[in-house]
Length: 452
Image 1 (cartoon, rainbow, N blue to C red):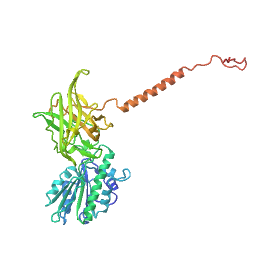
Image 2 (image 1 turned 120 degrees about the horizontal axis):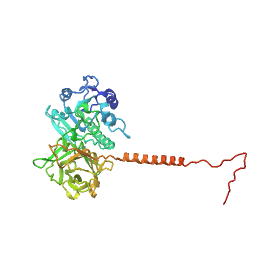
Image 3 (image 1 turned 180 degrees about the vertical axis):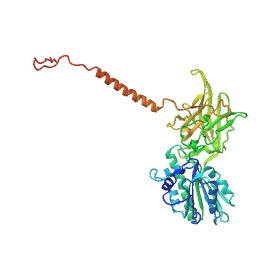
């Protein structure tokens, strides 16, 4: 436990290099009252805050009079995010407001390492500690209304952080930082005493144990890898007919609104799959989401898969034929994408580290109609199987990566060109020969006839 002072990224990076474990999340706390954490004593470097320690620290804020508590929750957060994005990224720091708040608050505290399970259950713990006027804020335009007669508990669900690209992550952090700064300033200007907590529900990187943390190579689910959560399981009434997994699942509308479907699909599994269909030759995975984002009452995503016999290979192959996005159950506005090479032998599953609508990914979803140009899909560590599932487990996964990657082809072509130049040079050297006659100063000079 460390009282906060000075520049946030330097503090986190220099003071706490030993607590960057991926099973922990940082927790930032600040208060408008100076007496809340003044008595908090620092512990040894590398200390991991336990569940009881965090609850005792929060108890001092909860028992303050009057009590107003703001809980900012993000989907993922890690020490790496602070050390990287607190420094200048582009023209401005994406965490500028958080830095200012932590430096200027009368009382602040940084817990660099808290077990993510503790933070995951923090919301439920706080709800039982007082007779709160509970306010849930899921969008940035929600007005803040206070109950002057009861303590207020604000639960703010910040927008998820996409891990598809550095630019998307920086923009999401900047948006969350801006909202945290605006709400903090609003409460301060209104003279409302409050205590705020900022943390993530999950760490940015998750491993089952510290022993597996150094092993960053990709492992497939069929080999018993350390997945974050079990795959989505779809049954046809008696047996499992579809298995679906991804560590990140997002869709983007009009290049502006990002919808993170990871939690609803795999963690809470609140997605409705009742419209999915299974057979020996055709399988459809239907994912139906209720109110996934502002302006969308519902969203359905369908994965169409086939299992056919191909004479060229004399065997059956499983293939993802297309993906369809249906907003608000309006089929006339559906966005359809065709796949490129998403296939595997009949008895295998299909795996690809990155798939989506961008051509930068090994497997690209190609727009098949005009509406698809307004949507973008991204899945990380994508794995799916729609046929021949045994024991509710993925079969051996056929990966989208091929042996002859573009880098290998570039190396081969460069090597061939260099070898050709070397062979040509050796051939030219071998053609060199000496003259039959030489000039002799004691004899008559050589006469070389000159003809037109």
